[in-house]
Length: 294
Image (cartoon, rainbow, N blue to C red; front, side):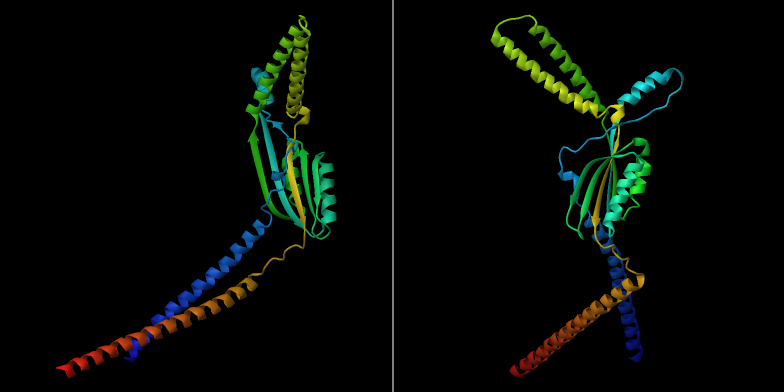
C-alpha cells in the first residue's frame, strides 16, 4: 500500500511541476508580447490620413538603355511615374534638440518642408512634417531620420501613377481641342446671347485647363520628389525591462495562480469525496430499511 501511495504521489508531483512550468513560461512570454503590442498601439494613429489637400509628390523611373534604344528608353522613363511615401514615428525626451536636428537634416539634403503642424504644450508636444526629397537621396534621408529620437514605427508605400499621368495628358489634349473649337466658333459671329454663352463656356474650359496644368505640373521633372511623413512625440523615453525583472514578475504570478488552482482543486476533490460518502451512506440506509421491511 505504501508503495502504491508513493507511486501516486510521484505521478501527482510530476503533473504539478509540469503545470507550474507551463504557467511560468506562458506568463514570461506574455510579458514580451504585451509590451510590444502596447508600444505599437501607442503610435498606431495616422495623423496625415485625416488631412486633405496635402502636396502630392511624384517621381520617374530611370531606365538605362544602350545604342538605338536610347530614345525609346527616354520616352519610356518619362512616362513611368510613381508616388513613394515613407512614414516615420518617433518619441523623444529632447524635443527642441531633435526638432532642430530634423530641420538641419532636411536642409543638408536640400529637401523641402511642404507641411508642418505643431501640437500640444511643453511636456506633451507633437510635430508633424511632410518633407519632399529628391528620389536619389530618399533612401539615405529616410535612414538618417530613423536615428532621431526613439523609433516607434516605420512604413514605406510605393504606388504606380503611370496610368493616372497618361489619363491627365489625354484629358489635357481633349480640353485643348475643345477650347480651339470654341475659339473658332467665337470668330464666326452671331447673336449676342449666343456670343455671351459661348464666352462663358470658353472661360469654363480655360479654368479646367489651368487646373489640369497644375496637376500635371506635379509630374514635371523639376518637381520630382519622394515624400517623407515624419511625426515626433514628446515624452520620457521608456526604460527597457530587464530579464530578471520579467522573471520575478512571472514567478510571482505563477506562484499566485498555481496556489489558486491547487486550493480550488483540493476543495473540489473534498466536495466530491463528501458527496460520494453521502451517496454511499444513503445506499446503506436504504439497504437496512429494505431488510427491516422484509
